[in-house]
Length: 372
Image 1: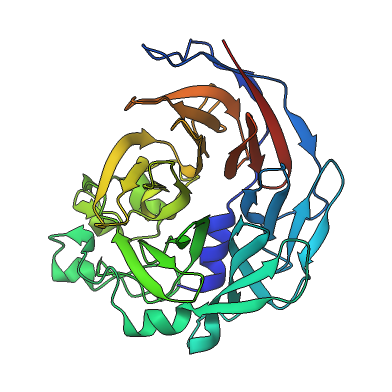
Image 2: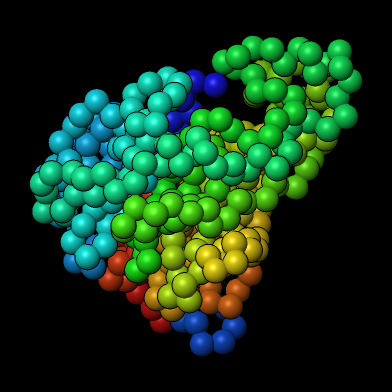
């Protein structure tokens, strides 16, 4: 699978934008107030292709651009300055902390092969010279990640498995992890930058001194019987219809709670906009032990999440909502249910700051929240 194809899939397709208040109340029992979304405020970006975002305490949005390879900060409608100038590399998984912006930088090769292919970089938030923090590519070459997990079809006869031969459009009938990588999201915490990799199916930590460690390998998603729509979508041979399939979890978004736990969204096998969709969820990871617990399921293309200081989770979903164009869902404190907050199509990245949700993809939208 070419890495360009994978990255384009991660950026996905811009869908129609609608904003409709949820038709049912969202208050959970107990002390949680009712959350009321206001009217969205659009901040035009000028350059499409946002693949990750973070927002600082002042409400400045830092965005990594898929196509230019640059990182810029948006401080208001129509405003934006480059923190990292466009260059011949992919800028991925942006995060910020204490006046410094961190991001993964990947060369624009179809098949990364050298130790210099993937670095965690840092740059002053006000702009300046980028510095290398850690060589993630070299670490991957010497550390096994999800090699113990088994993905793909179960029990295919050899005559069918042998038809999985196309190197571009098909993956092997049975596989164990990926030999390529794609940092999808990151969050800067007091002890380092936590990075979710949607092809390696892992969360790693890079300390500010450059030490890299594996935090967790996400478990395979629950298997299901492959129907014709799924097989056709992935261009698998038709003989695979009716066999069980074990999907990869594919982490997409990441956030850190005030409890010190790491929260990750998943889109099984990465098909956020796939019509025969695979339902993803939210995992809570204890970074001290690496234990991953699935706390929410049934999400329709959960591409990103944000968490408030009190523990409320907001999730951007590529599908769902009244028109199936996408929505923002909310998981209340002490709840195990994701409830619709607003229809919101086309937003892949979400952050919470100052009682406002920031949602970005082709545009940046600010959605104010009030509480009753």
